[in-house]
Image (cartoon, rainbow, N blue to C red; front, top):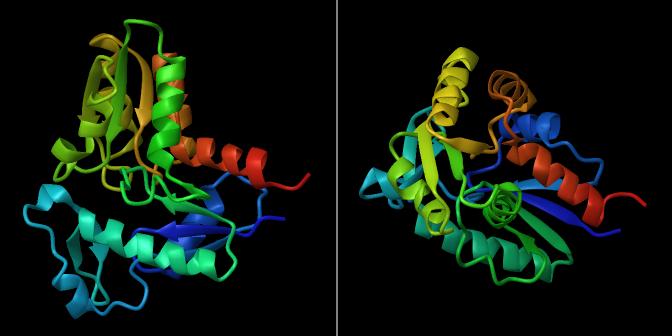
Length: 225
């Protein structure tokens, strides 16, 4: 059976690992590690994003959150993944729906953004608008770009899976549908089945939940036979 490694864009933490194990809907066996493992808070501060829009939020040891430059995480993740594969790991899933440009050409590396883009385009009726729910207003202007590059009409809103309520998410998605969205992507692996169920009920539209989609992919490609 293939060895599967799920790589967080941050440092490994028990809390994040437990969340992944609880919500990644797969029977495939996998290990979890972090792209920033081994780096100190001082080193992370040297990687701070400028402007913040080009960063990804990472928690430091003292509980402070810092936006780390996405490109630097991308480069670090490539180095970590190349080491994992040299040590015998067959398959790696980057645990984030952002684009990871340095990883997309590596064999055996799954980038969720490519999977979600392909599924969204395949399911979207011709000429219809795609609704994208982004998780962070500080980075939304950058995060929406890869969706806009798909050459389909794109509508977007920003709702945090952690800080906003289910009712706020529902209201935002209903508004996307009212504006013409025929399919909605909850564009963050922190959205859960509870988010999906609430939005699906309220809108009646197809809803893509990355944690579920990626879990099914791992099952189909790398799960038990």
